[in-house]
Image (cartoon, rainbow, N blue to C red):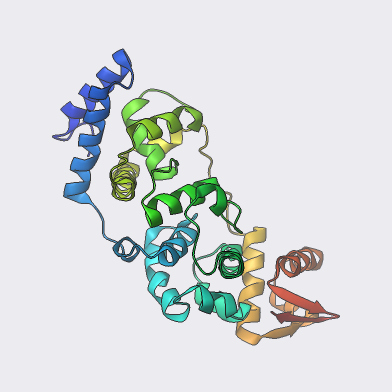
Length: 291
């Protein structure tokens, strides 16, 4: 859907109404009609949308943080086959966990997900809480993910904004504005939320926003927009290389590890200290082992 499509008249009408009168009942209705109509015609299907199991939705939301749906599709079912529930995930050795996670990047998410599984078992009798305020206290779950899980796993009318949602509201309500802050977007998300079906409503927003980003990418006009730092030569790349070597071999002498890497020795040692502190590995003298 774009301004030149058959839906352009509806978009222009919505923008004109919003500019003159703000978010009136008429504007809200028209906005919902546009989003639902797009979703009926172009909604996407994903395996995590076929389930209302909170564990499966938690896994998908953590995987989708900073990772494309295409990459998550390649790992989601495999992960659930190995770790079908909180118990299996909580008990997994780090090496097994990271081997299955490999390819998704941002490995700290895997450890945070495992720690969350352990907290759910120890403090919530194996049931993921539905309250966003409680979810936000779990490892690796911030305000966005907490509200997303509440909406998608429990169908609660929680309010949140992420890159696709942001694209929809910038495109329709702020078509000529630059550096639009999320503080202006969030009230609109709250006031237009379809509280009768929040889970499906957010799926509709996700899909419309993903479509817009393919050609228009309204998100670049957000105050929250920033380009990701290059991966090549970064500390992220170094950490990933270290973990891949340990996954393949189990343990390495420091001299062997330094010989495999192109980074300065002190930079490697600094990353090793970080990874040990985070629980990925253990350093015993000159021997480096995967936990």
